[in-house]
Amino acid sequence: MKQHLAATALSLSLTAAPALADDRKHPLATPPVTLEDMKAVSPALADYTATSAIGDVWKRPGLAPRDRSVITVAALIARNQPAEFAYHFSLALDNGVKPAELSEIITHLAFYSGWANATAAVGVAKDVFAARGIGPDQLPPAKPALMPLDAEKDASRRATVEQTVGPTSPGLAEYTNDLLFKDVWLRPGLSPRDRSLITVTSLIANGQVAQVPYHLNRAMDNGLKTEEASELLTQLAFYAGWPNVFSAVPVVKDVIAKRAS
Image 1 (cartoon, one colour):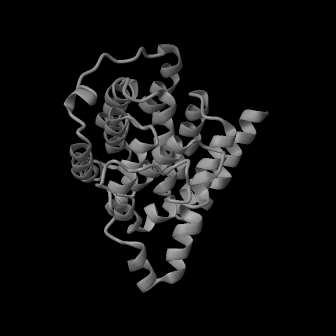
Image 2: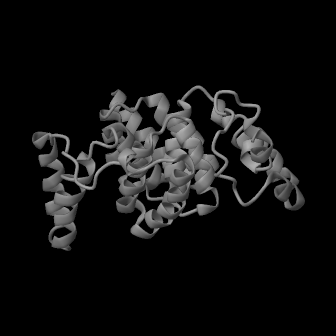
């Protein structure tokens, strides 16, 4: 089994990372591009993949492996990069992301990166779940009992949407207030912190920094620590590219500075 996975670009480097690798009981999740493929085209890319992208970054102490998987999965879905869906969906499950949580990540990102990106992820996740024997009983229901809404905190957000969005697009304002924030964000399949984490990830991964201040503040209100926000940027540099992350750095810096003062 290990030999099978060692043929892939990413899992080969994982053999040197005990915190992430195990005996891999589930043989799916083999990326279509192997380390040998990389070496045939770009030996440097193969080397950076083995030594930096997985061999070093994933072992940094600023984030738990589970959080790194949540961030990476969210970035791949947000950017609609299916080549590594299967591998990273499987790795996320190995790193402690529950099937119900992976299901909710896909659902949540339909609203923040578009329906097509989410449906592309569904096709791959279906095969990963089937290979692991994950059935409907392990997935969240379509209509769960929602978590309670903090009406006082939400009132300001709602008023802002009604004032800034409502006059231009009443339908968008309605769906934002009643569907997104009074339904999706209250689904119990993900913690508020995780919903914030994948939302911030999606925004940065797609270069949409205008909404980062609101959602990063919300993330930190929901329990994301300053050092975790810092390490989020480091992880994303490898999976969303340096330009997107560098564009977000001043925004993240400003949020952290204002919260500290």
